[in-house]
View 1 (spheres, rainbow, N blue to C red):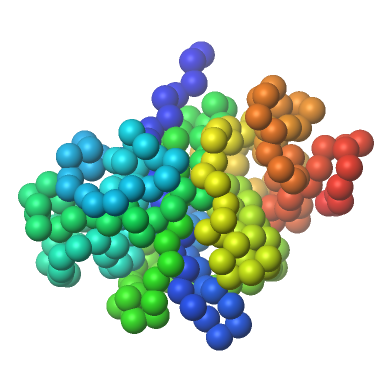
View 2 (cartoon, rainbow, N blue to C red):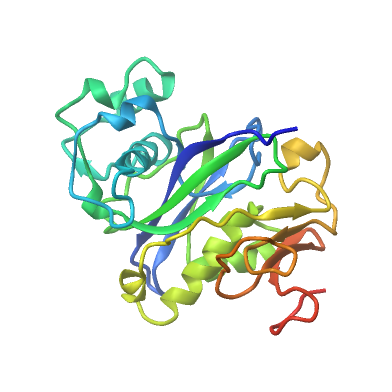
Length: 277
């Protein structure tokens, strides 16, 4: 059976200044969602047809010829979190209309997405083993506290918000207080590692040249697909793992494994690096 096609999607890591370091906006997905229900995620969603024609200024390095991903990221950030990364003033009525599907950003040419505000941070494609798949570009933006003072969940796709340092979000996941999908978990780890080198270290990173398309071992990572609680033994194999065929290895851990109900980064047995479990 052929794998399901990977739908284009985009998501945004929103960083604001915090007293103890940069804080990241996380949204809790609705429990009715068919894709990682109740998971804490970054605002984002599928690239829509109107995203290909909506006006924008600037450019996101690494997304040359794929600006619709960045436009979708800007739009989804407004829809899901109420934060607008562009020119013009959209207003709450437009947010409600977009969520209801009664209009698109193409109907508001006065609103211009500002692609200079986002940078390409990570690129993941859902494993072929999953029935619902996405080709997702993770973009990152820096905002002031004033810009996100009104950030709020849409109460349809997202139902709760939290601002956390990336390392704190990872720790809360290990304590079973935040449920994360494997890509979200690993991107949070990578962001925490990058910010530990300095607040401007993110700006020095080159955009990803190749996507990460994991292999699944031991069952689906998506609870909605499993229809049951997570069981230890599920492993997400990343490029560079001995059991992954990709010629473009990741830097760092090559596996994300489920241990006591939480994801942990690990190396393949026999490889250099710390192990979990």
